[in-house]
Image (cartoon, rainbow, N blue to C red; front, side, top):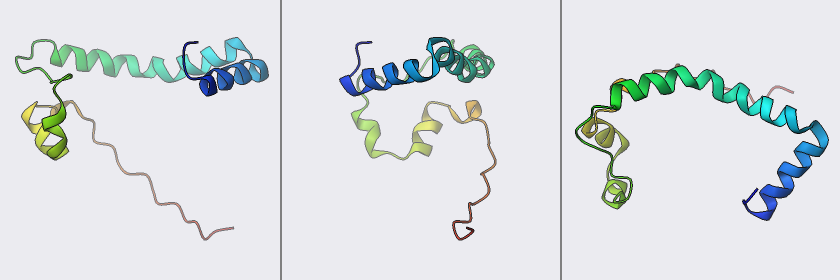
Length: 92
């Protein structure tokens, strides 16, 4: 598969245990619900004038995420998700 040997072994084990179609069915189960969200993001970002610096990202590492998201107008694209309830580790 062109990955590291450990990843190749992991995929081979999963395919041997569960089957080829199971693996790709599980991948599609995760990817298909994301398509509407990806289309929404694409529609809202295709006419942007200020592009994200993919290759010259080092100056961004010293800044907060909020500053970066505000500079590139990314906050409207983010969904507000309610936090998951805390897990009680004391219960047996």
